[in-house]
Image (cartoon, rainbow, N blue to C red; front, side):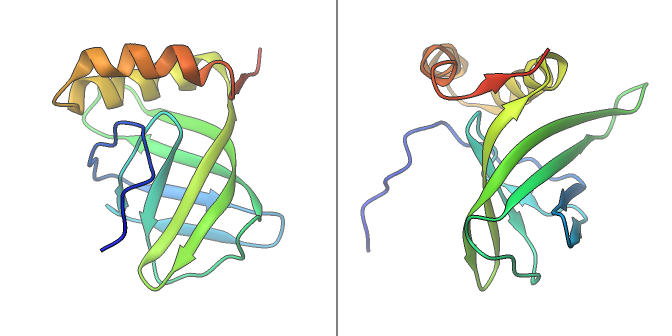
Length: 127
């Protein structure tokens, strides 16, 4: 087995995810996993080329209002079971919701705060 290279805390969160590119749209119902402050893995049989720019919409269910996390990203991995998306930028509200999603589903919420400090160096928040 290969050594794990990812360093961000990832959580399992089942929900509806939409990945949009200039030419395509992928909707995975209850198909997200490995959600982190850096990106997510979407279980789907749809393939997109690595490097493809995309927009991601993560629908948060179980809330009294409709909430979605919106991010711009890039396909970092495409394999037989899904797509790995690396986040590149968020609007501030989406980042806040993503942070809470990861923190509340993590076994070590304090690690999220440490990761968040390093994340600001590589991810742009749009105003």
